[in-house]
Length: 426
Image (cartoon, rainbow, N blue to C red; front, side, top):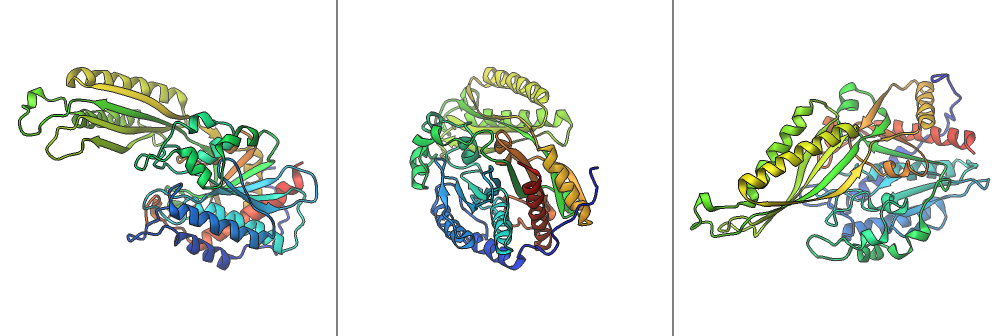
C-alpha cells in the first residue's frame, strides 16, 4: 500500500550546521553589490565554485573527483556490489543577480546526504554519487541545461560548436575546455540507459504552492515542457529626427507589438500551467538618435500539453505574418528549445510518500513549472524530485530564501529514500 508505514533509520540525520555553512560559503562566490549572485557558466565565479566543490568533495568523501566531457562535476563513495550508482545533485551556476538556493541547494544537500551516510559507516550496495551539472541556467551562450543535455546525448559536439558568448564571442567549446571538459570526447563519454540506477534532485519550488500551504516538502509529479524561439526582426535604421513617422520601419515597435500579441495568446489559454515570457531582448544600433533597425529576442512558452503548444505556435505565426505586412519588416524565427513535459518515476514517488508518511510529515504532490536537469536524466535513469518552499514564491532574485528547518526535513527525507532505494533496487 502507498502509505504503509516503513522502518526508518531514525538515528541518521544530516548535519544542518555544516550544510548551512557550505551554502553560505558557496553564496559568497559571485556575490554582487546588490547581494545577488552572478555565477553564470564560464565566469570567474563559476570557476572558483568548481574548484571549491571539488576540494569539498575530496575532503568529504576521501575519494577522487571527476569532470566529464560536458564539464559536469562528479564525486562519491563506492558500493559493496557491482551495481550502477544512485546519483544525487543539481547545478551550481546562477542566473544574473540570482539567489543562493537555486541549484546550489541541490548540490550541497546531495553532498550532505552522502557525507552523512559515509560518516555513519553506512555500507551501501550501490555506489552513491553527487553531481553538479554545467550551465543549467540560461547564459550568454544561450544553451541552458547544457551539462545534463550534453552528457545524455541531446546536445552533440557539432551543436555546441555553433554557439558563442553573446558579448565576448568566446566559443562555447573553448569555455567547456576551460572548465575541465572536452566536447570532442562527448560521444564516447555519454551516459546511457543502465549506467545510473536512480537520480534524485532536490530544488527550491520557485513558486508559492508549498509556502502558501505551510508544507515543507513537495513531491514533483512531472516537469513542464519548455519551448523557446529566437526571433529576429529586421526593419530599417534611419535618422530619428528627419525620418517622418509614416516612412519608418521600426524594428523595436514591431517587436513591442509582437510582445503584446504574444501575451494575449498566453492569456487566451486561461490555464495556470501555461505561461509565456519574452525576457531577453537586444536592440541595434541601440542609440537615442537612430530608429532601431534590428531587434532580437527570445520568446518562451511553458506548458505540459503539446497540443496546446501547437495551437499557440500557430497563433503566434498568424501574428508574425500580420506584423510583417503592416509594418513592412522581415521576421526570422529559430527554435532553440522544444522540450516536452516529463513524468517523474512512479516508484521513487511512492518511496518518497512512504518515507514522509512514516515521518509524520505532510507533503504536496505538485508539477514543476521550472525546467531542471532531472528532465534529461529521466531519459536514462529512474528520476525523482523533491521541492522545498520558496519564501513568498521568490526565486531568480537576491530575495530568494528557504528556511533551514524545511531544508533539513527534505534532506532527511532524501537520506531515507536513498537507503530504501539502495535496499530495494538492483
